[in-house]
Length: 383
Image (cartoon, rainbow, N blue to C red; front, side):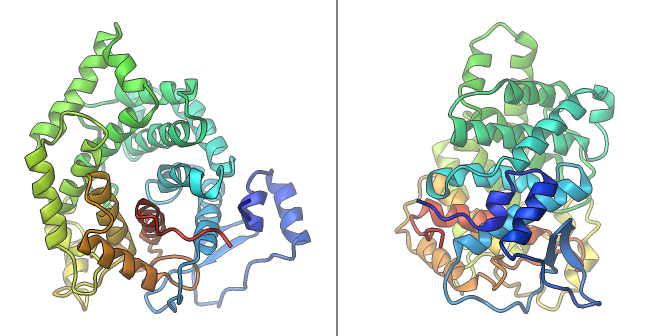
């Protein structure tokens, strides 16, 4: 039986009951230094800032990593009241896939996604095509699809509803609206299209049922997405990694030769220490409108960027999903890097591409390493 940390079990309860239960267990957030901003904070949750100098653990703790993910997702949903690509969106893309190893996730984030489905469905489609709303709808659909695939095994009416809403606000280009500003998640429409493809292909039986059905408008929209991803050049090598990952589920995007070529590209990006760095996968000007170029070029390690949890996890996961074996030497070196670089809080450090304040990318910098470790049979059991 898997031992679940107190905050995981508490996530199944309402806010007041959860607070009482946490107190009964003797859990309380650690006080933060006055000058140190929190990364996530809501009710009794206070997650300290992520920093590059946080000590490394001697061995991977799945329990600490999952506890960080649960607290971050609950805090973001409770405080911000929206779906974000980098936190609760990343949670739903990852935690359901860990169900077989770690048990069924708490329902707190799923419940929030269902609430957001009702709220977003009530909005006019024109409103949903603006600002961050397209990304919210896409990650809503993708998260619910992951839950259906890995937790229940069957397509839910909510997931079908979310996927139909996602395609209803699709642009004529075949992708979706984007602010083109916050890399990597909100930096280009290409990224959003790859997640939309994963959402459609991940929901159990949804894609095949639609393509065999009589809804010609929906079938045409799916075809537009396939054409967009097949014919639009990725904006950078990071986009090519996302394309490879989407192609493993959504048919018709990359042929065998293309898969081999992208896999070789990923392997060429591997750093000498065995990890990967997101900064080598795109020139600073290639992220969105290039509005982070000055910040990225001014970083002390611009010429030799350090490996990070986000890209190392994503690179290994994409390679494994594309069929590269776990005993591949590059993958083995990447797994060794992950095993040596988890931080004391349970996170894997990843410096933000946007600002040096919140470093929210450490969140996906933790979900992706867990999925990568699982894909190689190297995920430790919960303590």
